[in-house]
Image (cartoon, rainbow over all chains, first blue to last red; front, top):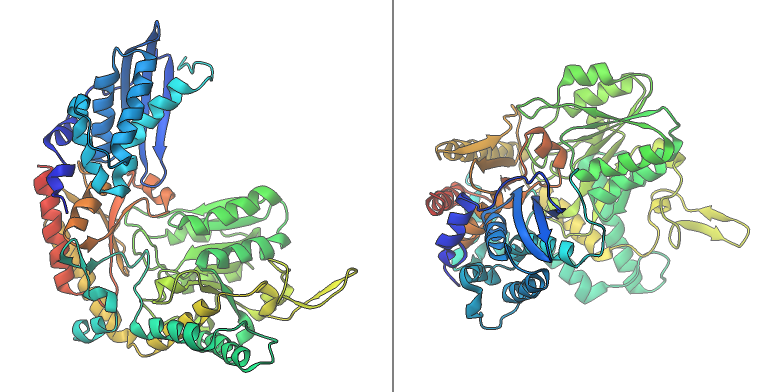
Length: 147
Length: 404
């Protein structure tokens, strides 16, 4: 068995304690809720899009350390990315969390989430925010406004 | 009482390791473990006399029918019901409640009221919500106090001549509160209301006497009283069950069928359509035998002692809060840290071999009431020991260390 510190890496503990881009956004182009009914983890993502780029992103929510840290790391990573690019990136993260393939080096800090592979019950915690974002970006629904 | 060593030997699973540490099983409110006698009864049936019950003329069918019906008799005697006709086998407490809601509930008319307490498990809320929507009934919530007890004055005030049914849990699965159901049943009856008790959490901790309680229905879950999953029972007063339409239709629940008309079978078979969970029923019968050999006066004392020890030790951990403070508590303590989510607690203590439950415990209205999204819950059975609690406490200190 792996050690607990593989799951609760310093990066995770840090992003849980001080989540980045945490807060409500008043004028977001898209607002999406991610909910894990199993454990009650709930996050709301706010996204602004400019020329197919994620120009602003923030989130609020409650959840375990893994889900908060993953949301925080995600907002940091995808800020400024093209939509296509972030969808491709979602696929990489999804693969990293759910497969046993060797971990790709180009994921940077996000590699710290790979520890959940050893904890099948926690994979959903790590992927919640990513699924929420991916769903918004790939859906053809009209833009949801907070106004 | 020296419960631990001999009792623990009855439960083979308690011998195993989890993550290279001895298992500390404190998730009994979710499901209790099975004693060897239950495992053997099920396996003996599967190996030696499996066959469909009722109507078969061959030997195997006679054997399985006898074992099946003797389980019904055991339950009837154990809970002190008047007749086997009052014991319906179900999939569990959830199905037991659903039978009453969808069958007995058909007699309710627009404007009638159903009362449900704020501390119910979803299984004793949603079926009522559904029948209320369908038939335009009012669903009334009986409020609880911050200590986690039903506010009896409010209950008395809410009861009125429109109250047709009161649904309350005997023991709360999230708070451990033992509700004063005998008194509440009496009060409800005075207004002409029928009472259903969700007994899922009570059966493994105390002796139940439905005649003394005078409840109209009592729902039981096998796997929360040392029997297998997928089996449970509904007790109902015969005169009520008699007047109720069937819940499901098919084989077993009929006396005669032709294309003009079907005549339904008598109680309890009217409510047991289809081939039943025979091995489950036999396991449940063996669990009742096991319960019959326990001394619940001793067990109550032993468990209360353990719970007090647990609560004392938990409160010594700084930053830890216990949810609810009922005067009468059984089996369960929910707790949380301000800054550490319950799921992180669950994962870390699991590493130490400790099984506890984390989340909303299928009782979201309680979580809303306490304004929390999730709690950690330790729930005990008579086979737990002070050592189990010491291991949990040590593991919780590790949780604090990691998140310090």
